[in-house]
Image (tube, rainbow, N blue to C red; front, side, top):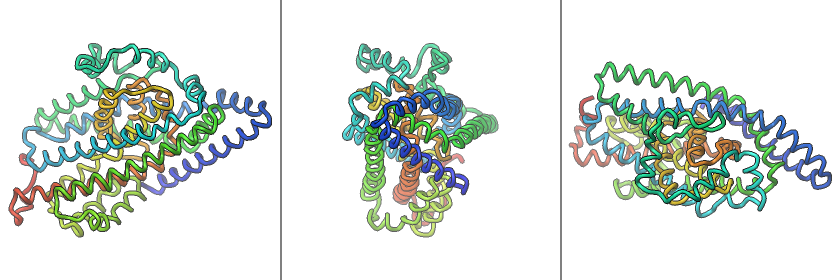
Amino acid sequence: MSTVSKSLATRILWGLTIGVVAGVITLGVGELSPRVLSAAQTVSSAALDPFGQIFLRLLFFVVIPLVFSSLASGVAQLGRLDRLGPLAWRTFALFAANMLIGVAIGLLMMNLLQPGHHLAGGAKDLLMQEYGGNAKQTVQRSEAQPGMSFALLVDMFMPRNLLGAFVGNSRGALGDVLPLIVFAMLVGAAATQLDEPKRLKLQASLDLVSDTMTAIVGFALKLAPYAVPAMIYSVIVKVGPSILITLSVFVLGCTAALALQLFGTMSVWLRVFTSRSPLMYFKQIRPLLVTAFSTSSSSASLSASLAMARDELKLAPSTSGFVLPLGATMNMSGTALFEGCVVLFVAQAFGIELVLGQQCVLMLLSVLSAVAVAGIPGGSLPLIAGLLATFGVPPEGIGIVLGVDRILDMLRTTVNVGSDIVSATVVDAQMRKIAPVGAEESVSVSGD
């Protein structure tokens, strides 16, 4: 992350602190003078909430083009799917396992702690009244809806009216992300069947759209130091101090889940698939983890990852040169875990229960959307908003966690980078078993 980005992160955290302190003070004064609290709530509804909406709507604007272009490009860049060799298939299988296990850990943690249920009795009703929109109708429809079935899944992922599903039923609702993800993957898969010049041309066009949408996210983030205190202050003075307790439990739960993914799941991979000691291994890569934490960027940590793989871990250059750059854009286990946690937490906060079948779908969507996340701080926010809308949760609910996103961003980036280097180590150990030790350089993706 650049100096400007670090400055932005600091300003967002200061904004969060100011908003929380101001909100708590207002509540305290409101106990003595209810008129002050009433006036603060009026100002929040009339001025602070609309200002926060400007920030949120900028994120909502880019959901559809960003998800489509990023995911389609990610699939298209694989080249000919039928030419991928053992190195590639091992890499992609490990990436998928990392992200699925990460999301499962995050959802399990949120189900155990249930941070959204720590809100006071009337707080959920107040949240629903302020931000819910059509969420109550969604809850009623979900209660009347039959259980999860194969036919229902087909209808969810492949509606008859694809364009209508993208656009949504009204100007106040986000479009459906599920069919958008399926369509993007189909476009990417079809691109791999094109001639190489045509595939590269299509991929370049998709990357151009993705970069443009990422720039719009950058515009939105410039408002974050001002929108965050406005939104958190508004929520506190309307909902009460219980939202702070809820948010604290959420942060602790996310932190524990991320630590379990990095030091638990990755230790299992090392113990089962390599001859390395997990304890010694994590001591060895500690400088890389510190770099990832401080930069909060997988891409910015890539050079350090490659150097670590070459100089310290002694991995084959052909393996690390393939796995690590690909992992910096595709192996987002920390991000996938975080997305699943946010969706389930915000759903709980609004009193919307996601049943087991819906949480299984959420696992899959969190993995797919994590691959499409832009490589910038805050890049996951538009995709999380889309996931919230998919499950009938008010997308504006993302404002609840916005202030602590910067802290968790550093933690999940550390997990992403740690997962990348462990994946490269595991794949290297596997490839050495099927290739002569002296021929590591010949190990590559066949057909490239």
